Amino acid sequence: VTDVDYLRVAPARCGTGRRAWFGLASLLQLFLLYIPLGVGGLYILFNAVPAVRRRLEPKASLPLGELVADALVLSLVLFIGFVVLGLTLLCTLPRLLNLVVPPDRVFPLYGFRYAVHRATARMTNIKFFAWLFGDSSYVVHYLRGIGYDLSHVEQTGSNFGTEVQHENPLLVTVGSGTMVADGLSVINADYSATSFRVSRTTIGAHNFLGNNIAYPIGGRTGENCLLATKVMVPLDGEVREGVGLLGSPSFEIPRSVERDSRFDKYRSGDELRRSLATKNRYNLRSMAFMLFVRWLHVLCLTLLALATVELYGVLGHVVIATYMALTLALSTLYYVLLERCLTRFRRLRPMLCSIYDPAFWAQERLWKVPDRHLNIYNGTPFKALVWRLMGVRIGRRVFDDGCYMTDRTLAVIGDDCTLNAGSKVQCHSQEDGTFKSDISVLGAGCTLGVASHVHYGVTMGDGARLAPDSFLMKGEEVPAHARWGGNPAVEMPEAAALPAGTGRRTPPSVDSAATASVN
Image (cartoon, rainbow, N blue to C red; front, side):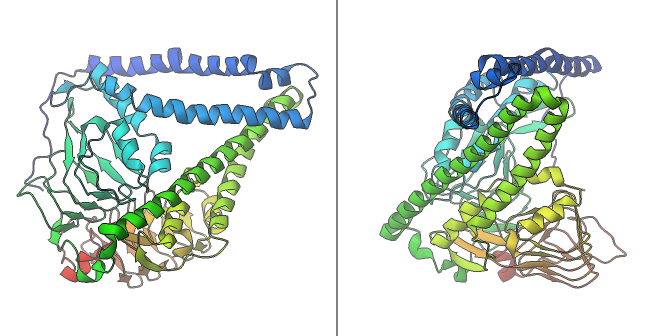
């Protein structure tokens, strides 16, 4: 039950015929546009690219040196073409599409404007570019390029993380001096069962936003706010300024505490300028290095693909199936080895430092190692094996249906644990200019509910359970066989068995809440 009306857009005419036509048009688009373009693209690749065409000729036997040279050229063209053409399209095409869907007007679902709106969201949320520019000074130029209004930027070198999402980048305003951690979703559209409307979403100046926050249109926060991890942004009441918000539903906490001011010397003056310049140079090297290793991965796959084409006439479809399996295995081993090399095959150590400390920059570089390939292992016994290869201390018979661990070597998972889809074990926190990390331990037989979030320095006893969509704050110790839930998570009596985020709870103490992890 809530006093806030979350249905804020008027209905529109959207009958069964309109829904049926939209579904049929989507199918026709797939079969008459996308599939022919895909097949035609393969045909052009096989016939127009000499490196491929020569290998399809009967009795073609080309030397190894030519195979490597062809793969080198082809991979460079594909990779550089994707980066350059992708950035060009992202900075131009959404601006044209935005003219079709003007803001603050109600449109029916399942029509042309609705399709354009969805296309804009898909196009501008390509994860590669946010991954490349995030956690550096250069992400603000990328976001401005795709349409964000960032006011006057007060550069920190970590203004935005690598995971920022939106529905329409041209309707996002972020105030000066605001820092955003990973997992921000900017909600630019309101929906009903029959209609939608896009509007501008504005985040105030000098805010700090933690992980996994959905910021809606009309959020009632102003300047100088701290929004903690998974906080529910209020839509009613006075505009909050100069405070922190924690929980779902949210309650106020202090904006900061005295012990977090130890690195204030880096906030302004010559010290900030020197540290920022040094961090920028380090981040540039990180970006160049990560582009190189991504291209090297493309080169390896291209080399394998050309070799597969050369063998296609011998074993046919068996070769293609083998290629697909080898692609998955080699990609996994490649990025596992890359991550372990970056850590020098050592475990991370708990840290408390400034974001201008070189140790933190090395951590940011480590976060840039791609890990999306792990999703294919979700729900299989292989996921635990891959985690073990990446340095997670993980037990036997662990079922992982889609958990994400940011600092792999700081996580300890016991035997027989169940990690549900969308759960997260995050062994670090960043609040403004301070970075903190520590070990988090899940005992044997623990269960993490869907979309639950475990923070750093946490210990869960054997058999403990965390309810879905809960946020277990830093330093919490959950007793064995206990059931915790809510945001922030507290003990839940078995008799009540309330879902996460409901029922009465006692908020944590002010000092504890003020230092709640927000990254």
